[in-house]
Length: 268
Image (tube, rainbow, N blue to C red; front, side, top):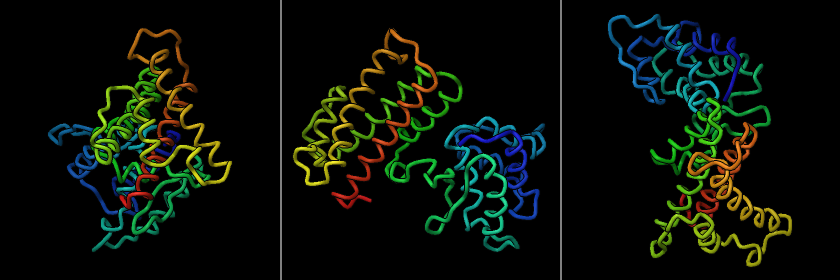
């Protein structure tokens, strides 16, 4: 999620509670909040003004998944219990602000999620349910490296993200298979396990065409890593749109695999 500096300034007072919409958070509370989203700060003498601290940290998170997660945490209805504030009013105010950047907050079960203007989740929910610390780290690294201009590094992490999901599924549901670092071979095994082979699938032809394309994505991720990433001697310098393509393909493919797993094995 990436927004303008003006949006960050407006959101900061809502995050720290210096407004009429959200509970007040002390400096120590704010440190705990941001430390849950990747920071390692310490609340001590010389701590900056609360609004400065929030604004600077949100600038650092801008463009990453954690930016949205901070806002979603602030809007957790449980934070409003026993206070004079209402989460629904805070949601309306935040929507007023982030609409200028193409985002909105929607209700999702008992909580709130940020989606883009097309209604697509900033982060795939199934990945969120499936995630472990390493997987979560790869998702964050993908987005952070694009933001930092480390495009070959983002491609490396995109491949690792897909590999993490594939290895995780195989280790749990196909323990006899020994993954040896070959992404294409690993996906071939996943294809049989999750019944994703178009020739063995009774779905419409349009879905079969997309399923056939998944193998091309796997081949592309494997070869992009070999040709453009920082994992090997680079033969081609990737640009931003190349790394975004790799990262977004990896996220979409990974979410589809987890969703399919949940459908077939009742693992959701």
